[in-house]
Length: 640
View 1 (spheres, rainbow, N blue to C red):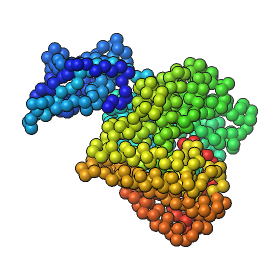
View 2: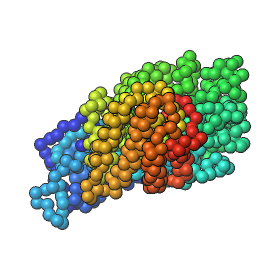
View 3: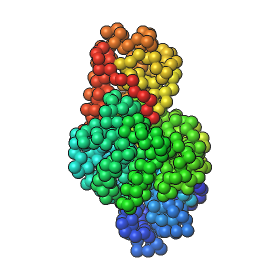
View 4: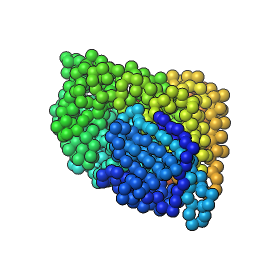
């Protein structure tokens, strides 16, 4: 019933019986008091009583007070016959106590004498003492590959995250912020504007979520560097074969070109004032082309690690002079452990990894030993899968929580990426988000992922309403399909790769072991998903939308299964264009139907920019089935 699971819970024999009104007293300062009172009013309504502001704690039956001795974010909730008491270490703890109370009300039963005019309830007695294991519990949303959510979508997610006690949100940005003077880069991408971000910042702050600016500042800038005059700042202006595009294009800034720092200073001066947070995530990950072109001589003389570290320090200087604290992805420094001790001591190292066996503890250790605050960053395993990889996500997040806490990490951020066009629907991320919220708050729940009732968590806490149980079952069935064909791809599913690489032969290692029985098992699982998605009458709007999104994902995965069966029968060294024409015609027709559904569903949650780019996935698949020449080049293995 409760998510995250409290650290200490004891039921009591007492119970609280709601009356016609619920006098409430909240001991907090504005504006936090206003938000907490609104939460208390929602609880009053759920109990069938009218909210009333009491002038003192003694006159209230719902009392929210502060006790700094409990510690930051901690709270104690007591439901007794005389009323409901919440004591919290700070205002955030008070919000978390109210969030737990709102969930606990699901245990409430109607009073025997309730009537049509008053649906009052009895709340079972309980004492809960709770506090988080990780002070920072966050989500990183990819808004750059290609889906930029509408403000309505973002606000709905923020409400969900806050109800799960997530207190940190980053919108991963490459080119989707409307920087003044850089319209060439973001035109047509429906970027977030400064006004959008300021509105979201206020919305987050009211809900005790810190909205943290995130702008990649070294690699992953190909959306900038393909344009002039930015191409002149690239490490490889003529292009570089990188794993995040089908094109040969510039990817990273040149760290030895001082004009790059001038560009970043301009971006930071526009971006940072939109946020109240004093943190700033600058990325700096996966500079795969470093030392390959313009910085080759410097890397040969000083070492690639030293060149990278010097640029990191320069970026750090830009951040510090603007009154912010820098966070960065730690992967590049892990390649140069001898230099970790020279990192700025106030920087935050964010250690990422997305497979079930990722060594978070081992990778976090050198940064913790060097005195840096360190966060562990697992993933939802949604990307490059269409339907998710639920088992991998649970193991990955649990390992991050357990090993991260043991190593001394202070934060856990779960990442949600959109590689190759962000083709997975939003609900596919629910399992990872919910698991991260639970495991980061109470790491004891991560010790046995088999005991974590993910279906109930989705049905009760993902805001699905009526029909949520059916959606939850279908989501978990769909999220297990990736294991059926046999081969387990790193950072994706073999079914996704059958679609992504439809224009190639299947001689890559990712397809080794692919066979007809495994594909048939996947087909049976997809049939079960379809059957589960027959929602009851009266299903909520959100459940119906989620069901439609999961049907889309199941439909495209079914194309992958049928394409795979045909290609296994044909031979892995043959091309899709050699399949029988009747099979290719059938697959093309289904692909076009699903492309149209993809567009319809996109418009319900996301801004239009980026849609055409994502549709190229379908165009390449269609071309491979026709037998044309629009065949994607072989992309290198991408981690995210």
